[in-house]
Length: 320
Image 1: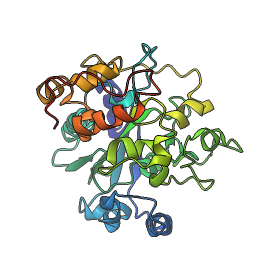
Image 2: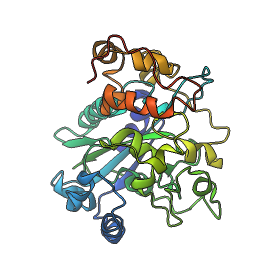
Image 3: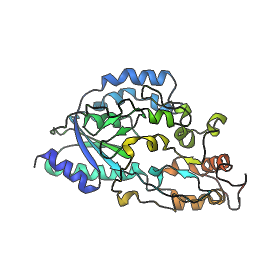
Image 4: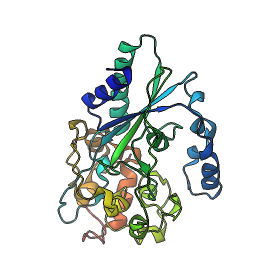
């Protein structure tokens, strides 16, 4: 086996669902797209998106001497039948925080690489650094970026985490994915409750329910609250509408098994929860990103939709 074949096989053994390798280059063609998106204010309050644009376009600024980009996908798609009165939490957030899980796996993959190429260096990135992970997944032959702006793998659909390992090792690379499987389909655009998905494949975070239930540190605007339904953390409507997710039953890694009683946590339970219990049950999940205070504020917005009174039991509340 070549080193590249060994790395692909090792990634699957570690629990990744797919692995591809891209040749390093500057992503200069993404510059105008990023500039237009930022200039239009579609990043909303995510000011970090406007920082380190140079690093997003050129991974050599993150790892000098980079020659190859290893991209790994981990499937997380899950379905659940929720009890009445249960606010919805995006399925990617039911288990341990993927940032930490994937970084750990990528670290082990780097060790495998170093066994084959002693002295090789690398650096892992998972969604929290200025790396265009989805674009590198396309470069590594793992799928295309759909109109929803999400990566769509031809076999796994769009419910995958993306991890990137930059390395100075020279590896045999995969061909970039050339097809666009969306064709004329616009189901994700039509399904988006707040009209956040543009016809050009961009997402306007100012209208995105995921942004407002996770990232937005201010008050959720009335026009967003009107279409929130029973969504508490994140929104998967565009993915549910995507035909490439129909019938996909990926093998779920035990690393992402639901924790803390998720997803079936009732609205009253959220309202009665104290900070100590929240940390004990959810500190290692993506829910910690927005914190208990925001979760309770959102629950209070959606109680009418889940059939509960405006106020639930408040004893023991000590918001984060």
